[in-house]
Image (cartoon, rainbow, N blue to C red):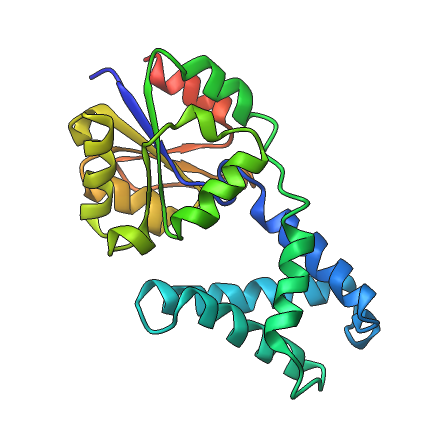
Length: 232
């Protein structure tokens, strides 16, 4: 069946979130004269992202607020280098200000969205908050591609891989799940989640690591491959 709609994840699918986070946390540490407390800049960035991977799911599960996971991440990150009792809110906000100046879309995103615009309905389903994600999309010039078809877990009340949020995204496009492709960088949350919700699941693995997926999940390594898949 022809794909009539495409729903996208945002972070590390459309926007290179990890690169912005790495650049910002290293830059912020350097400005605070704290970078030399880590073995290397790479070690600092890896710890920051690892803490996010650990704590962000607690926000999605309702155990922490969006702000709460930011502050707990900062507290634990600074405690790792012996900094305690600091203004964690101010520290995180300084990092975020720097991070938000470095948002970049992947090079293959604008050509792909340009190819699909006007011929395929486009939307977003993201495990985040609407204001935060629309701000990112606006910053990199992608917001107009999606119109009102942007659905985020904070406002919806359930997070991927819950099938209902995928179905709600399809409803925003006015299409049944079997006519909608979903593209995301996380195999379990995006690939398997979309497949199990009845969408045409595409796992975007930009690492090109020779990944293998279960039946019903198409592995792609760039959005150029999505164009080819959509034309089949």
